[in-house]
Amino acid sequence: MTAPSHRFLEAHGLRFHVTEQGQGPLVLLCHGFPETSHAWRHQLPALARAGYRAVAPDLRGYGRSDRPEAVAAYAMRELVADLLGLVDALGESQAVVVGGDWGASVAWQAARMHPERFRAVAAPAGC
Image (cartoon, rainbow, N blue to C red; front, side):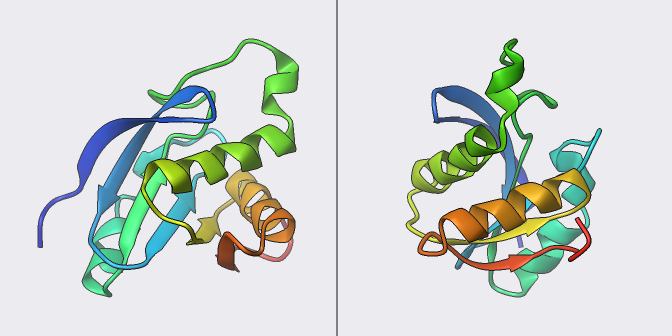
């Protein structure tokens, strides 16, 4: 198995840093606050071994991804649109979305707003 790779993707008008590993169905991992994609470093190889393409972006405003200045740029609709753009930029039509902490809210809303694109969600129910 290859090590995780890092690259930048253009999505929804922003530049996102992503860490990815594996091949297969796409699993998009949304980190919490105040974390980055590094929070998923242990899950990436486990998901890759299980036959998934695991991708952990630095969400907008975090890590090496773009940081819009306007407060309105961080509305939930914008965060969900980022995930849609990332799925497209990764050349996929669907993904499983996983979230922890603050990222769980983004994951739940993405699946709620776009069930045709996010076929499953894994996140704590209390978020």
